[in-house]
Image: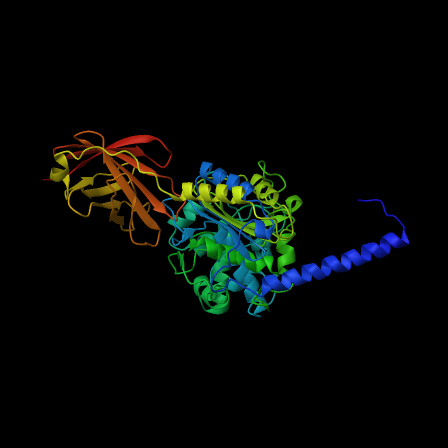
Length: 517
């Protein structure tokens, strides 16, 4: 804290400066809010918004080292960086994983604003009086909506921030997710400790449906996505049709930025309040200690993470699906990726790219550097391909069937000749009572991925190459998902196919299929 000086002239001069700064800030705020991105985002150069192009170029390069799919930065209401890493593209919805929770929290806030939810202190079990709930005790009775929002419900749950989400997997395999969550035993009293739990947010999705008569997806369409101009999304549902509360929402990166911009603008959109008074303050000033060993400063509230010392809070999904809000810098940043990322470093790098509150002089060298880096990461580089052997015609169109195996492959058919090379794949469901998953799509044989039509899980991209007269390498990615590249080595020998690939644990396994011809 600076020493106070009782100098009348200094106080008078300081007052004049304060009025000038406040007036300029108010003018800038009015200018920003006069152009809302409901229909489309305004575009600007980084320098026009006081940011350094060369610093942003380094950030884009960092994203390439962390398997980013996109990196977007908005300052003063205008996009200053919009980068997409090939073969991902701007028009493909990206799964947001646990950033879905922040949307559920936002819908809960809207329900409060709409008067549908009377209080965040309302007890959770009040909404499930029609159910017979196991392991009811005083601690479970005292769970509130707010303790769900803060991950302090006390429900016994194993879903560490880094590690196997044991309870979530068990929930996925259960026929009734809400029953699975409600029947859990209690490990702590509500409010005592933070424990990450996707069941909390799924309960809130069910509560929203009880309050509104709509799924969370449909309520979002009416009261959140609609007003913000978001028209493209996918949202998974549980076996009872409830929108998944903990994950499963896919959005375009530019629409993810709109969610952050709503928070940056204090819960208002086009000048109209969508969120209740005090919601943004509680979210941005999160105080629940997440007990993170990697980033001990992390705090939590209303399904948002926060780094208070860095003056940033964020919606966070597994493998760096992130919406960062920097209130002091008037910035929203969005990343989608297929790997983990260091939040503190990213916050520092984004903050460090800010050089001024007002426009900087043009920087041709920095502008060219940034444009070159974006072109580099957005342009797919072809891999080498081998000559097509005679066996390609023999195996094309044949269906190879597999018995139970570590890769869960049920059948595979490749068509590698003719004008439309493609594959058809069946994967056994983790739940044997459910039908197998079917995938089909084109295959690029020129070293470049070919993309399928959009599916509920994303856009499927595949390419392949021949290693020799009998061996074909197939590479597949689901664009818009955080799944890693799937690489299979296929060796054909008459009616037999030997397939080598990595299982869920990353261990290489070999399985054998027969064509039956």
